[in-house]
Structures are given as C-alpha cells and as structure tokens.
Image 1 (tube, rainbow, N blue to C red):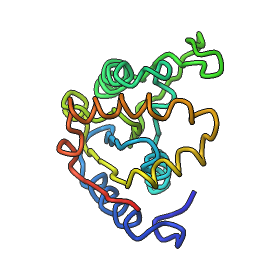
Image 2: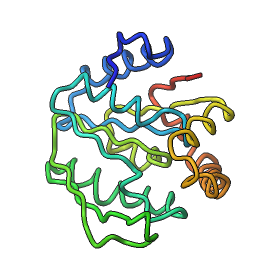
Image 3: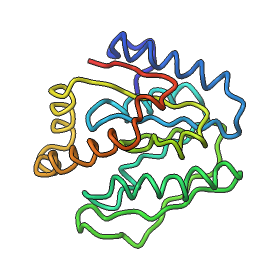
Length: 191
C-alpha cells in the first residue's frame, strides 16, 4: 500500500489524501466516519487503502462487499445507512449480509466491523444526504471516463466487462438523485 509520499501516487491523489487526512485529524466524531464516493474505476479503493495507512487502527468498509449483486447500487446505499453507519454512530458493530458474486445470490454469511477510531466507507453510491448526515468527512473522487473504464477493466477484466453499462446506468441515477459531488466536503480530481 503506497504512502502519500510514494512517487507512484499522482500529485493530485497525494494532495487529496493529505486534505482528507487533515480533515480526519480535525474531526471530533468517535468513530470518525469517512465516506469516499466516485464512479467505477475512479480510484476509491486505492485512495481508501492509502488513507487507512495513515491511521493505524482504521477500518475500511467496501461497498463491493455490500452490493447485493450487479443491480444493487441503490440497495447498498440503504444497507450502508441502516446496517453500517447507524450502528457505528451508536458505538455498536456494523453487520451486513455478504453477496456471493460467483453464484449471484446471497452468500448466507455476514461481515462485521467494530467501531474503530476511523472508519472509511468507500464505494459508488455511498454518498447521499442521509449518509452524509452520519459522516464526519465526505469525499468525491472525479476521474475521466476513459481512464476510469481502463482501470476498472484492468482490475476486474472479463468479470466486469459485460456489466459496465449496466453499472454505469445505476451510477448515473445516483448522480442525478443524490448529487454526491455537491455533498462532498472534499472533491479530488484524479487523472
């Protein structure tokens, strides 16, 4: 996992991580909840991992572990609000069902995250007015469409390729309905 001083990070990413880390340090929530949203391939997972590396006991929740299937962006938004953010704000563990992507059905298992000093929740669709109200730091990652698609398909390849347009349609709906870039306290433009 690269650190913000790592030369493999773009200048924009390193500067964005510094801004978010400063906002986390200044926040008074317990836990400090950070939401990182952006379209597929924007760099949310890498950004979240690098940010988490700045805070020794940080926990990361990935919406990839929350989405109930390829048509589940909207449902994941509700799951995160009800089963992750609300319990964490009460000082309770977050617990949610896991999806079996290979069988395209619920796995019958659950994931749990204990309240940590910093909890980073990353994924397309995470930033809504309801979730922002439960967060201390909200982030939107912006990246060009061509770069996003290249990164996403390089990462997930043929498993994602047939679902790219289907997922993009759900992201478009999220952008129209929730305007996550406007809800973000910090917007980071990445190449």
